[in-house]
Length: 207
Length: 207
Image (cartoon, rainbow over all chains, first blue to last red; front, side, top):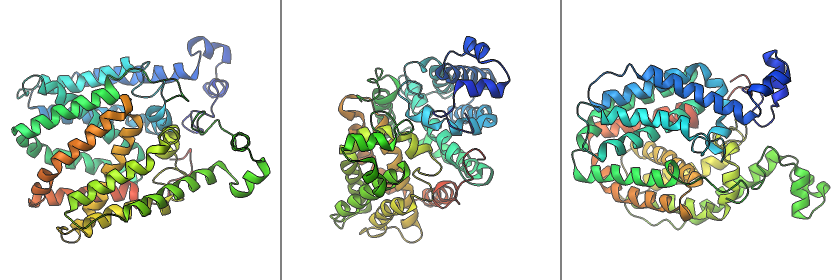
């Protein structure tokens, strides 16, 4: 799939490349959809495992740890994920915000929420969890940037993460302003309405 | 294509739906790729036409005008663009940052640069053009949010634009701080390195 794209690859070809009979493959993965869901499940479980090493500290350090861990876990799979962008971003059934993939997504989203809520300097409820979700979405935007990044060795993504790291202290300071706190709460509310808590979309072709 | 997706639609089906012979369609659109390029060309030209009404004023008002004009021009085509997300975002040859689509992209990007550089309160070179490109990318992120937005009537996107409008005066103020100016310049440099000025990507399957 990494070579030929999701749409044009058949399970028969996957079986041939894996060196197993189509019958055996179908037993474990009855559809291409099942392959994608298994990939999400495996990567998100690995992410939760590696995130367990998050140390106590201020929320901005914990967020950076959550972000860098995500990039590290996904790094070996970049070519595959690059080929799966059409599915990850656009697909109403197997995309990142779809109903069927919610379980894996909530694992990662929950890690970002916990990174903020469990920080030494956690903002009070409900701002802490809201900030966690906004930062989770920002992290997804950075992952998309990384997948599209055509600079040598994705050096631009490394620069972007360094830039985020440099501005975070300033961002943390502005979060003491009521206007900025309100901004984070409003941003969280509309991200939930549009993507995170939205009901399952209409079947393809009617949306 | 809006109904069945880009990959699985054939030009023969497009011809049948359009009520023309496949021969006639092939004469004007020798490939599905040509259909996409024509769509980009048409939409970006319409965008430039409607953006001509931008009035003099501060850069944040001109940016908002550029952003809202983009949403208005694309609005009637949302279902089609929604189905084309896999191509727009992920495709190395027909995607938004591909070599072959650069002409249409530069029309829109140039409008955002001109919105800032030509403002009454334009930041000095090279910050003006850099800010224009960063805002052009921010606008693309908002368009992606709009396409994925599952809230009723894409109300969350309208809230997001209103939120951006509300925070822009504060953002404009912080741009007087040397640290924030440097941030905008750094962000622009890495966006160019990763996406905007990057050389054409390696053929699919090798990247």
